[in-house]
Length: 255
Image (cartoon, rainbow, N blue to C red; front, side, top):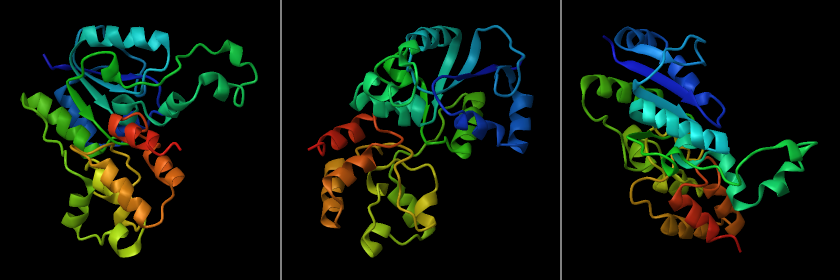
């Protein structure tokens, strides 16, 4: 029998699930190798667990989701989080720096009907996670590598170094050194192929902190090229605002 694969959505925009669907030809090969048991973005047909592998997109923002992720974990042999929301709370983790009440009234006509947690948190804050894939959205090549590796019974090969190394590999001129642009590449995990710098746009930190990221040193350098404290705080509070390294650095510039 083919191993079973389930895909689950929590608080997110669906972009990481769409990345899997956008694999097109590779998706056909995946579908031949596994039984897609639950993937409501693709089909309403479902198969009861347990599941050999679960891919989880999105963060935990409600009490119901906190309960549901525990059920998913219990039903899954291997649990893989995909994307910035699942790995670090996502853009919606900006709520963690204020209160839900202060935000809800400006968005909803009847905020009293909301039933939500005060924070948006990563999946790993609630259950054990076997593999984390970063990015906003997740990179299709990393996603395929993870699925292929799991089918082959090995650990996936995933980058832990910074985007700067990817820039060097593709011969991209450093935007911070050459043009004085505020770039998060030195502190951001590789995986995107240095897409933004290759298009003359500084790195926005989509893949979260690199291994041993020196955010304090980067913040100092950003200040030296003219970034204000509020600008530095904003740079670290985007897709991975609640990632510990980025959160700590952004809070350091609250004043």
